[in-house]
Structure formats: structure tokens, C-alpha cells
Image (cartoon, rainbow, N blue to C red; front, top):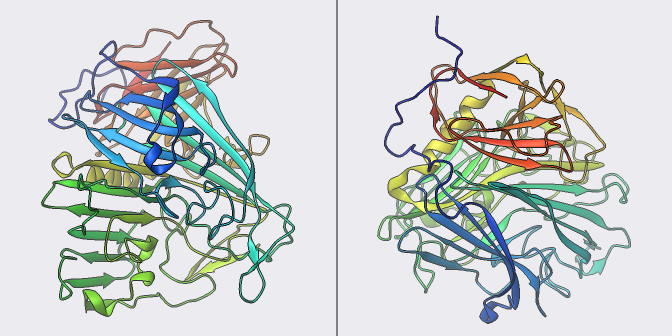
Length: 468
């Protein structure tokens, strides 16, 4: 029987996390001059450490004549630093709700002059922070889609930054409660992003892609029209989108935080249709219409580096049917994904996907305190609660959640035969004025909420205990 005491673990190469106290932890600089070439006049600059101990920095627009607050216009990572600038246009950077839906000022496809934008930090700690954007978004109606609805969809989007993470956690709520059920049938792909993630200024074609819904779609060579596209069905667990460039050694990925059977995501089938958009089989690259690719992988623009997420249309309906699965999307619909840019050699995408497939089997136990079994179902829905399918695992934070007992906790997580690299644990009900000292961990305290965010600075390959 394995001990449940805190472990000293031999960390495999590539899973080492920079230890507490290393240089340049999570920080935010406000009032920074942005990239005027893409309309990012003034920005908040967010920096955190990744698993290699290297800084990653993004810029969130705060002032712009063209874009609303909260648009993510630049991503910098690696050493030497690689700067990924947004493409100035309807799908640049990282944004919400298709074609810059809420971010582009004025009328645009999917935008329709969204209003009431607010960017604020829910909290900023020593090693973690959550930035929230909120706004109201009308949508297109009419047979030609050239009219604007009187009702609005409320959009609430959180970005979680954490030292020790290669990814950004993107969580969003689309609140349709002001819209009559089944009226809003809009393109709500979120996130929607396009930038020069592979290090090329000319935005050349990526080498290949993989996309997973209930099945898997793969093209190892997109550089020639005869590149093979292979589609299978029913062999995938966690939705993902992944594209890479062999020449530059770079990759970009979006990975869901819940299994497909739990929350169908991606365009395996059009909403309401029992049939996959692309049947199982093998095709040449150009025999698959680009707009049919799951998550719109670079489709519209000549196989360049665009990537989006989610099923278009029928969100805002009380009952959405996708193939053999169904879910509710009215009065509100929420989900989270990881957004990753990295070097191919780090194999970060493979690690994150393997961890997500493992999550439902991870066991959480509390000797002091309790394992949380209900949580808010999405950003901006803090007054609601929903059951966590896997006790303790909150997909909106990609974290294991516990509640303290009189400000104390003694908990264990056990990944079984799998590995969790630098997992995040969140503890509510903490009463201290300062964060406790926890060995091999990066700890942040949200004083207002009485919540601790704890990233374990190691690869967890067996039961690991945290107590304070």
C-alpha cells in the first residue's frame, strides 16, 4: 500500500517546474504602451513563469480606438523570446464570439457593436491571477442576417494565469437569459484567435493538424494539396485542436477541460444533426472543404494559423443535439479550455491532453476539511451551483477544490497510474492574513474571498498530501 504522506518525487525531464522563489513570478504592469500597428494603444502586461522557469507575457488592451478592453493582442514566450503579434483584423489575437465578436469596436461580423465592456482583476496573488471581461452583445437576425436583435447576450470571460503553467486557462459564459429560448442561433466560437505563433512574419502555412471531438481528424501534411486527411469516429475522449509547424518547431493548441461525452464540443456534427460533418475515411487535403474542419483550423485563409473553438449555432437553445449527444445551452452556457503556444520539443500538448483524459480517475480525499462536490457552473454565475462530475475537480479552473475546516486542511490527491504535472489545488474557507508555507508549492491568497491557490511544484506520480 502506498503512503499518502507528502512525497519527494524524482521529476522526469520536461516536467520540472521552477521552484518557489525563482525570478519573475506572476506580475501585472498597467499603462504599458502597446502595439499601435494592430490598434493596441495602451495595455496591461501580464507575466508569469512556465514549467521551464521562463517568462511568458501577454498584453490585454485597456485603451484603443479600434478594440474593446480585454482583447489579447500579443503573446511572448521562450528564450530567446518569440513575439506572437495579433493579425489586425476580424480574427486577430485571442478574442471571443467569432471574428472578434466582442472585441472589435463598431459593427463587424459577430460583433454588432457590443457594449458595456469592463475589464477587471478578480484577484492578483503572488503566483496566480484571474482577469475578467464582461459585456453585452447583440446578434444578427433576419433571413440575411443583416438585422440586429433588440436583446443581448451577456458575455463573461475569465483568463487564469498561473506560475508553473505553459497554458492560459480560458473560461467563458454566454448568458442567453435575456433572449427567448431557441431564438439565438449565432456563431459563438470562442476563443477565436489568429497570430504568428510559429515565428514567421508572413503567416505561412502550418505543417499539420489534429482535431479531436468524439472522433479524430488528422492531416500530417497540409503543405501540399495531396496531403492525406484521415477521419475516424468514436475513438477520442477529450476535445482538442492542435496544429504545428515542423520547420520552426512551434505548435498551437486548444484542449477542453471536460470529456466530449460530458460536454460535446467542436463541430463533429452540426447542431441538430445525427451525422458527422466529415464522414470517417481518408481524403486528400483539398477534398475537404476548409470551413467544415472542426474548430475552423486555419480554414478560411489558405491554411494559415487560425484556430477557433466550439460548435457554431444553436447555442441559446434549450436543447442542443450533437450526433448522439445532447446538452442544454439556455439560459446560460459555460465551458473552459486551455490555450497553448509552445515549442514542439516540449510536447506540452501531449502532456495536457493526457492529463485531461486522466482527470476523471483522479481521486481526491480530505482528512481535514472536505472535497468540494458543487461549484459555480461558469464565470459570472457565482450565485449558482452545479454538481462536479468528478468529485473535487472543477473544470472551470482546471483545479482540485477543497473547503477548509476552521481555516485548516489536510488533503490528498492520487492520480493512480498516471501523472499530473504541477496540478492546481484551490482551498476556500481560509482565514489567515498571509498564505501558509507549503513545501514544494507556489501559493497565492485571495484575501477578499478567503481562497488559497496552490500549484504543486512537481510532477505528481502517486498520492500526494497537502496540509496546513
